[in-house]
Image 1 (cartoon, rainbow, N blue to C red):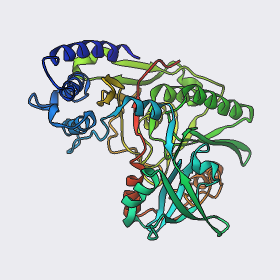
Image 2: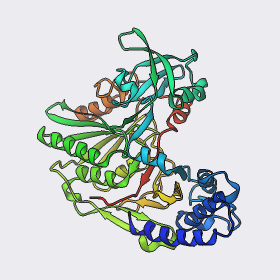
Image 3: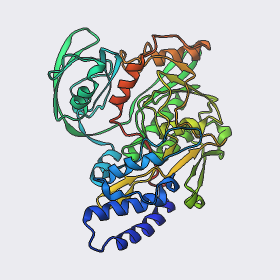
Length: 435
């Protein structure tokens, strides 16, 4: 862990525990310790009123949600913090290591009455049942009306239930009914990697779904993919981050080092900036080029679910290469990050630093704009050359012009997909060295 949180945690934890041992209840000590750390590290700590009473909230997560109101940022009329949160240590340990206990089934709307499987974790109950991206969901338990108007019930049935019965329409047109029981499994963020012939050149493509999980496994997967790309003489790369909500900064750093062109070696990748009280801990990270790929452009497929460490990757590379964003919507908009700060049996995550690139750019709280808008091809499996986002990008690589494929998603569909995607973690976590 970096020196900033280590010093502040020791100082503030000792202070808060000593201060709050005079007959306070355990809940009060938990609230007071959470607030002491937050007042020291929160990026907008000077905006938190001195009279703010953390004890009135039921748990540390409620405190983190309450402080969001004080995140005033120049150029934005509303508070920008949508992410400060807290979680029991046991739950965070599972989430951060890529362990899950659910169906492993994820869904989004293609249109207001067309719900599709967006992706499946291969070791999950859904993966073992053979369910695949692009399958249409006709019924969930007793929910027959599968529309955006039923998004709340769908969230409950898909993400917060221990058992569920689903009726799917498969690409063949045949319906199948499958009952799933939630179970623990290990996530694998690298969903697919492949290489396409694009005229006389080769284009590498990979779907990378999270910067959380077993870091050693993910590092090995990234190394394997880029070894393949090098061996197959890849000249363009498409990175599919459309559902990647972020995770560990150290994994973003590794991926950026593979993607940056040779001329960027030792250049500034990013700078982490803390609040005024901790400005002495600001840190600049430089590129250490890995591999032999020497790209001058990069294509990134994104959506409103592309957040934090994923956006950091894009922002870090922009000063060094032509980075094109393709997808149904602009990105999520999270140019900030945090540390897991231990408070008794909880971790709290107040937003603690912002990131900027070599050019000082980083205030993208309203998301990153697309270079080309195209629907999420939820009706096609991963890697299908007719999937809207991939097909449009491959056409640009071969012809110099993006393909116009499909109508734009309606505002209703985008809003309800945001609700469906809210269950996924979005963050940039500093929690170790970058080796």
